[in-house]
Image (cartoon, rainbow, N blue to C red; front, side):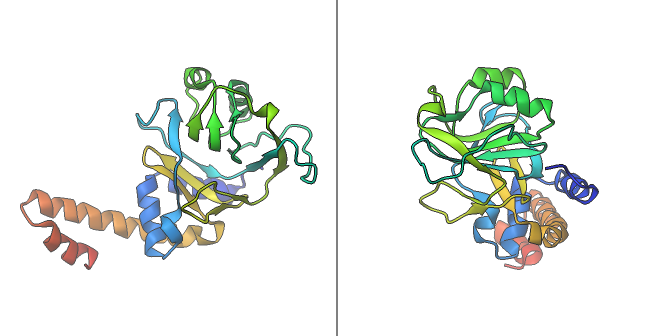
Length: 221
């Protein structure tokens, strides 16, 4: 997936906001869970520390059990130019060599709905990586890549969330947020007013006003 001039512009506009800002915008637009994809945490370049933030469009890679004979078989190079999300399996589906390739083609970062291994290698490369768990055993014995750029469902018992190819992803210390392509402009339009309202709330609280008071004035509740 090669970024277009329009997608590059959208990515740059999202970069000025954090994942919480984007989630607030989606929540105001009544998007389920504010676009939050639960259970995913920053593992590299540090574990839940630092100022790492990644913004990009989703290029999905779906993994299936190795013995699934019905699922399509994937051949060739499937590492994207912008972003990578892989599907969940018990063993680690993403290791250090994959990060070398992802960096080589200019991927903004990786989100793994499953296990990652070789954390030292990812961290040595300072590569942004979000995952559900860490592990030691490679995935080849139990799973295989099956399809690329197809909708993938978040592996969650608590959410019915899907990631579609080309959706925008904003991820930082607070978590991973998905912005559906069709809502991008609406979200970018509402974020500034939400951030400004929060700024005014903070200013009022520092001046001695109550949270209830400033929320009523600036947030309308």
